[in-house]
Image 1 (cartoon, protein in one colour):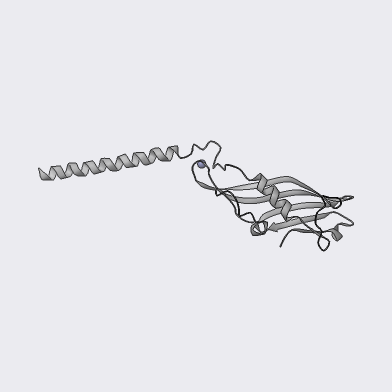
Image 2: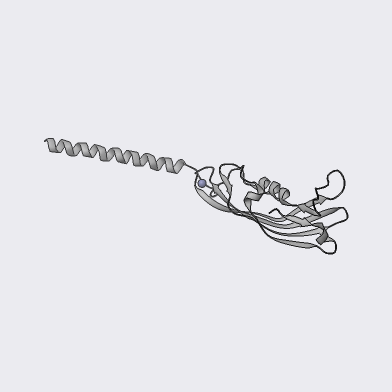
Amino acid sequence: MSLLVNLCHLLERELVLRGELPSDELDLETLDDLIQVDGPVRYELEVQKLDQSLLICGDLRVKLACQCARCLKSFQRMLELPGWTCHLPLAGEERVIVANDCVDLTPYIREDILLELPQHPLCKPECRGLQQKLTSTKKQNSGRRATGSSHWAELDKLKL
Ligand SMILES: [Zn+2]
């Protein structure tokens, strides 16, 4: 189920496309380990036929499941491409493939979503990473050692 635009529907007026593209369809799996696409891509697009080309503009939204690059916390983020535009020539060397009067928008949406993915997702901009966690584990360890030594102390007491 790709996102197809039927050119015959465009002859007289512009077309509005609204719906969801399953993320498997977009083949967005080969990503950074820290980012997964979590759900379909929602689109609301207007398609216009110009002289020798198609002009598509509208909004794309998709939910991402991310892992913070600093503290490894999981969090969700909405990726939005408001005012996304795509200009597809129907003639010339760069022309798009038309099959059964249809043009498939899926590859263009895929490409632009991949470009917009965050490079180093952070749970919050001021995330300080694992530093705090490390100190707290250190404290726990020394705490354990302390209880250990008090056990020895109690044993000592018993011996006495
Ligand atoms: Zn973080």
